[in-house]
Image (cartoon, rainbow, N blue to C red; front, side, top):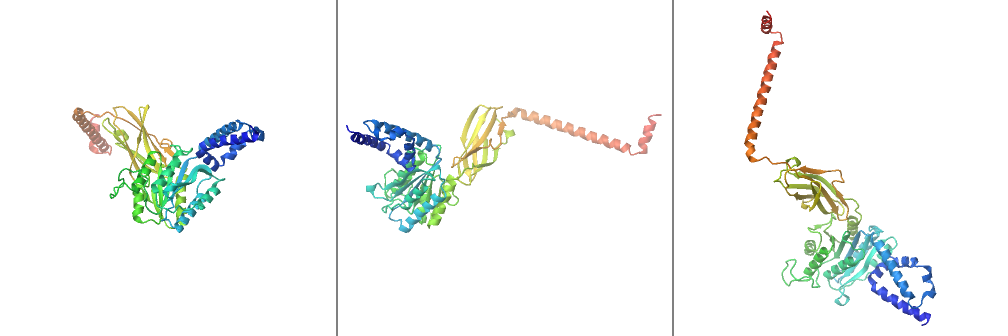
Length: 459
């Protein structure tokens, strides 16, 4: 076999390997990891005379191994996976499309950190069924200084799909990209940002029932959207927010009540997780997207925990009492993800209880009743949507109580009688002492009767 034929055969083998790693290959290529890996290959493998039968296969194996190693190292720095899912359907006019593209480009350029902590994905829905209804415009890409300009160029060059509104397809493709990314981890944050001007009208048949209770022909395309969102949340999606490009109030309210996560959703601002905002121009859209990025990506401060107290108070807990613990928890940027009460019994076993959000910023959890003499300590742990956390212990606050014996009913009357008797004795003694003191004070003022009596006693 000639050297040229051997080289051609080996390149075909490498092609098979590359195709089998197609998803990771695209990710590596986007992050410029291919050139890094090539630079790490030994010099002898770069010489032309290595292309003999089987030698290129060896290079392929080494090459992919290096890429895997670099990819794993690179992935560890990602804290947030962000997917922007945009509506490119026919109802999105060119002016709105320009708003979307310019707004995204501006927000990416000015707000997203360029330190490798954010993975960005962009998906467009509105393609024809023959084109899959939805398409990934930017595969999961870790944003850094080197590729930010290229990402913006991709955004500005995106053509509009210009068909119907297969929203469920778009969300499903977006979540699948996040879930299958090598950077996916349950401990990190997964966020979807949905940009649309209306409601879904193409089914993907995920829903099997009327999820929004709208009646009529159900399940329908809207039910499919809800089903996909519910699935994504069950798989780890932390947050889904919506920018409505000039949407009407009925569509805004449906998205707010059924698509935004977490629930209950609210109208932005503020940009705490779970919001929808109606925008009308590119500057407002860019501002909104920028606020979202700031809230989700730039938050490095933990939540603020204040006003921790319990009922009944620490010195009044008996063996029949459950203890209600309350805390005020706030986070002005990314929002409060979860508040947990960790309580410990007699310094050994520890039990976590998720605290319920009673109203606004007030959280509550219950510690069960324990036997007399039990010593209970507890700590409040708060975490926000940017994965910042804090404990009351780290703030210098320790909370504990002892379960005191409850007085038996049969002893109440004797104890009450003894207490009453002691009160009477104390009262009489204090009254007698005051009378005696007054008597001596009366004689010391030089009264003649006292002096005469005193002299008579000595005659």
